[in-house]
Structures are given as C-alpha cells and as structure tokens.
Image 1 (cartoon, protein in one colour):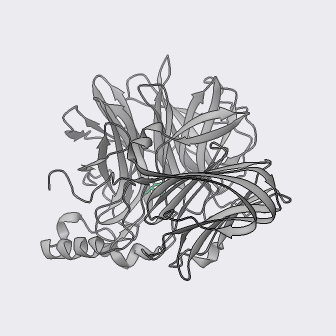
Image 2 (tube, rainbow, N blue to C red; image 1 turned 180 degrees about the vertical axis):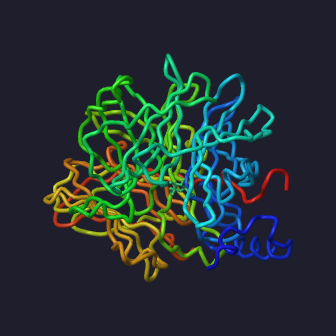
Length: 498
Ligand code: FRU
C-alpha cells in the first residue's frame, strides 16, 4: 500500500465509496450487539475516557476508510451509564501541521468546566523521519471541540527516540502530571513524566525509575494512578519473549504495583509485572476515576499487526466492556461494571451434579448472553464448558484440577484468526472450586474467573448458528450451578441522529 492510500482522509472518499463500505459492514455476520465498534474501518485504543457534564465520554482511535492502521482520527462515543452508548462523531481530526499523519492516543481531564484532551500528533519530516508532538484539544459541555494552535510539547527530550507518545494526564494536589510512553536511544522501553501547573505549560521532570530497565523495546499507553494508597502503573511493553503461559500475544499489556510514585525523585518501588488479561485480544487499556470514585478500565479488544476475519467486511475490532479495578493481595482484580445488569433479559437457571460426562440443557443456548457458571464441590480431574457450539465449532474453557491450570481454547471457534500465536491461552489458578462469569457477544467472549482474579478476553468468529452450550466433568463428579441471561442490544451502527 502506498502512502497516499494509507493516509487517505475521510473527505477523499466519495459518497458511493462510503455507501459501499457501510453496506459491506452491515452485511457482516460478526457485528457486535453490546460492545463499542466502529461504524466502518478500524478501531484501536480507547482514548480520553472521562466523566464530564453528566456523561461518560469515551473516544477511540479510528481509521474510517479501511481495516489497516491508516490516518487516525478520534471518534467520540458517550453514555449516561457505561452500557448504552451513543455514536457522537469525530472529535479530533488530524489536520494541523503537528498531527498531519494522525491524532494518536491520549487521555482526558476535566478543568474549568471543559474536557481537555491531550494526545500525540503523529508527523513525519521530508525524509520520512517520525516526529511526535504532544497536543491538546478542548471540548465544552455542548461537545464542541477546539484544538490548540500550537502543540504543548514540541520536542522529544534527549536520550529518547521518536517513539514517544500516548500522554496520560492526572491531577495531583500540587500539579498536573502526565506520563508518556517512550523508547530510549538504546532501544529499550520506558515511561517519562511531565509536570504542569495549568495543563498548558509543561516541564520535563524525567524518567520514571522502575526496576524494569530492559523490558521490551517500547512501552505504549502508560497509565499511572493510585488505588488504596498504592501506586499502579499499567503499560504495554512491546518485544517480550513468551515465557511458559505468559506473554503469548504479539504485544503485552500489564501492570506493576508499589508504593506511590515519589514525585521528587520519580522512584517507583514496585513488585513483579503481571499481565492484565490472559486472552488473545486485549491491548492499550485506559482507566478513569468516575464520580462514584470507581477506577474503571476499558481496553482495545484487539492486537496490532494481526489480521482479523472482519477485515474483508470493511471493519475491525471493538472495545472491551468497562471493568472496575480493585486491589486484592497486591494484584488487580477486574469486574464488569454493575450497570451491565441492565442488559439482562430472559433468565434461565440450572442446578445439577455431573459425573464423568458432558451435558447440555434444554433452552440453554445463545449468541449474545451473560452466564455465571459455578463448579462446586469438585471431585474430578477437570471441569469446564463449551460455548457457541455447532456442528463443527466450539469454544472451550477447561479447568484442569491436578495441573491447576485454566485454559481457553479457540481451536474450533470458527473462522481462524492468526495461527502464529497459537490456539490456546492458559494461566495457573489455585482453587478447589471455580466460578466462571462470561459475557458472550456475537464475536467475542470475556471471561471473569473467580470474581475477577483472572480475565480472558478474546474475539471468536463462529457461525451464527453455533449457539450451543455444554458443560463437562472429567473423571469424577462436580456440582454445577448455572445462571444465564440473554442480553439486550446496547449499541447501534448509526451516527448521531442519522
Ligand atoms: C497502541 C498505539 C499507540 C498509538 C496508537 C496509534 O495501539 O500504537 O501507541 O498512539 O496506537 O493508533
């Protein structure tokens, strides 16, 4: 693909081209029903997530015209309850000299009754060398967005390459601070801190000092916050080698927890790096604190540099459901926000004891549903379930008691994704009983294990008729309790009042 094609602007597409693209999207059998997804083209990172003027505002990286990573816009969605989302339209267009080749990721913060959106402007010079700027756009309570004429930070500090992006801003008592993902000149990843008294003038404070000096070649989308008096840094290190069950995706997304960041020395005294999610499709998470004091996370349900089956349908990717974050024994626990219960429709319940068998239940099936499934007590070698089953298809979740290992297997989940990264994801889990809380949409599954101790987030692309659900117990017996709800539609494909 040539540059002109890659960086095509929305207005360069004819009405006929857009109509054809929208038709293709509409005919895709994998459009989601309650996850945020692009009306056309490619969605990636969530951006600018904030509670402002009585609503949650969530933006995302968007290339409208195709499913590769082309010219990025910020697309705006809004919701009163984190469940029903309205497509507002484009919030930030790449059009200034400082963001000609894309309005890249960034964050939002409310000041003086306005939502300030700080993001990275992507540009290249005449020799096609990358040059990033940190920029700002300001949205008022009517949704009007005005971009500042000049970038806030127009340089990369000495010692770092042009891979310098994704500012996440927060308010401390004394100051605003932001953290930016960076690559050192020795090609290792890190994050740096800037400080500002007013959000407009920024001073480089230095590099955040962690114990992870040689941990991947670039850290994307850092997010620092404090929870229960502890400091938490989320970030996406690129270039880690797989280690057993860990780091199996092309790029990783995880966190470290420690004493709050020392604002003077920038020392961050922290524990080990944990992955945030154990599934195949999770990247670039962003958090915000809402008006109820909850720390809420949303991520891109996708991975960079990987083809997906909807590419030929003119759209790619969606966002994850919003999840609350809590710390439990030094680890982050994620739970779907309670508001999602509003989507619950028809409810079905099953209680049974299974003995070395696989079983399905009358009327228990579906394409888009929530299900809580508990195996307790367990006197068996393994327990699990299969969802979206059809003649040749199934998505399997299995807990191997002896090996204390939980596995999500999408070998037979329908249309293949990228075979380079394997068909299963697993993690160690020590528990005598198991609770699996699933949110299944037309082409995804989000699995919260034992009240959010682990989460597996994955796209799956089964045939629309594959709607079966089965439960199994291997070599022994186990009690089974299931509650399932059909879920209502919460997103639509229309923009504004279209
Ligand atoms: C992460 C990322 C960010 C960048 C954005 C561009 O997926 O590469 O680092 O700002 O996507 O779309």
